[in-house]
Image 1 (cartoon, one colour):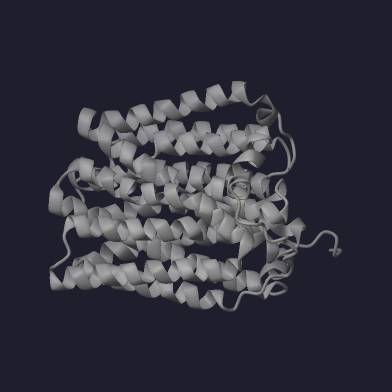
Image 2 (cartoon, helix red, strand yellow; image 1 turned 45 degrees about the vertical axis):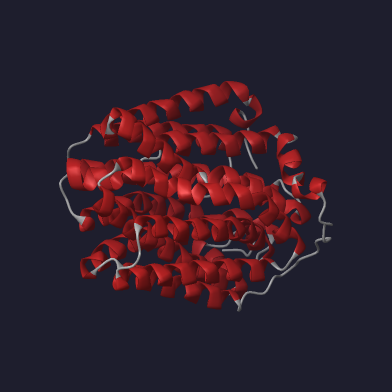
Length: 410
């Protein structure tokens, strides 16, 4: 085998051995991702136990969404102006402290539902700074030719954490809500420590002045590039309408009749499919007909959402969630590669901020939407209608963004 055509094992070595900073970054992302998933299970189950309200579950998403909306654009400017490693690590420290406060307050029994909302709002604000910093930092750790493969590796690692994290959170909850909070806090602080080992291979950015135009430059750039705009907005509305994550505690307890362990398994199932797809894409990254593949993945996401909403079998629900996760990963890898490769390095923080505002917050806003519609129409109708909405968006975007639909290669 010639060096020009390395094997998959050789390619993995190129990423993790020849670029050790990427390896440390990958470990930090996995550790912090696991912490976030453990927190999500603990917060969702605790709030539903305390309130038995689908509306309150939706408010969990809104409490994270609002601070992200307020902070993300300034965070993109910060990511382009200051050391992205420091921004990444600082955001993780804030999340770790908040998780430990959740553990202490729960153990001492002085933490109320409003107090939980305040702390997860702080976590949301810190994630607003984490998102642009991590998205713009990763392409500086490997050669540009390896960026799509690195994105697949990061996605696979995150999905591994998403598989393990909810299951760990569900099992730890048996020892009390403070147990998963304490473990999550430890994991995210470990991620912050690992960030200190990261060194950038290149960082030739001019430092933008703090002007109104500079802060909003990411929006202007995306608006002038319809392929990027179409891919980001497609993912936003697909997850916003099709995401049923906030309702998983309801499905686990009231529809599928399982406990906290069942909730952990349901939250892990999409990551199982996503990890399998990430491994495949890591060896066979999309190279042809990438636009059509992205739309096909979104359509599959909508169909599986409908099937999940109608399912009364725990095994079928797990299977549909796994397929949903695999389809979402195809979309994520294509979209992320487009955004990273089509954006100059000096703009990646601000463009990444808009990307995170669209994509990173769509989960939280989708949770709020799901909680509100479920409280009005019921859990199953809300989930099914969300899947139908995802299909309608996919077909509409195919007409609105023909360049994205016909995009062949990156």
